[in-house]
Image (cartoon, rainbow, N blue to C red; front, side):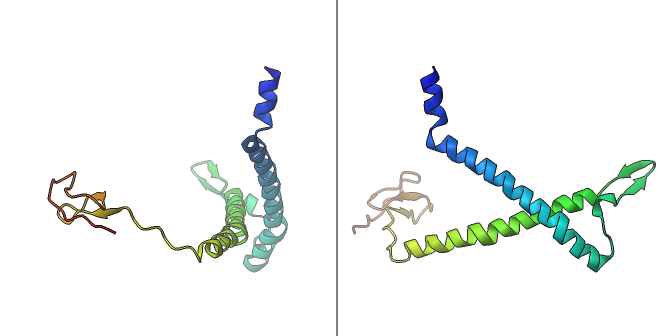
Length: 138
């Protein structure tokens, strides 16, 4: 049983997931610090409010503290911007470069001219509407 556990733990996807979680939480801490120590004071300098976490309003004695939500929202948007511009965009660009010289595969299916269902190219009759169709030979 210990050997099976060791095999499970050392599997590639488990280790990759663990590394991803650790790096993700560390990245979240960095972005949270960036928002708390840099972006919030910058926005406060422009807007005049120094601490968003104290913002609130009252309705019939209930206190709604929306300032902390603003801080978390800024943090979330910052993480989204960083991931998009520094992870997604470069990977999309690399993927485009890797596939630019490849010719797309010839489709093996086509649309039935009668019912517009997807049928094999070589079909002589539509499986959905049973219309007779001239097969495509190529």
